[in-house]
Amino acid sequence: MDSGVIPHVLAVDDNLIDRKLVEKLLKNSSCKVTTAENGPRALEFLGLASDEQNKNLKGTTISNGSKVNMIITDYYMLGMTGYELLKKIKESSIMKEVPVVIMSSENIPTWINKCLEEGAQMFIQKPLKQFDVKKLTCKLMNCRG
Image (cartoon, rainbow, N blue to C red; front, side, top):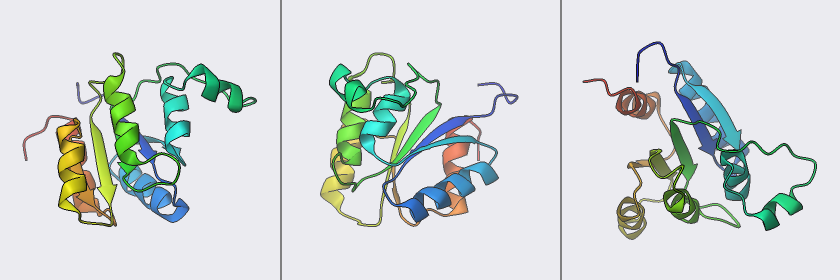
């Protein structure tokens, strides 16, 4: 990725305060940020929502295959967990190469291992800190440091 490109990150969290914090930290690190309040909304944004879901989301704009460079999602969300979202993304031929970062306030090794085995790039402890975001954006931009 050349240095002139601003990375686009999809941040998914069902907690508004956490979502705003992630968005602010990412924007401070010069990322373009799109937020989603749950897994189905994230899938819809990514163009991965099933036809059934699309019918249920009438009146919302559905963008197919939105280009994002990274997805950061909370693990524990009602309805669809971050793990289930990760699995759906990794099952998709168009999105499976996009790095997915899982975050959680719980430090549960079985969750962490499950997510990493399923293809998550990283598992980060919440609350997210600027230091974590720098690490993420560095990974995203393939910088050494």
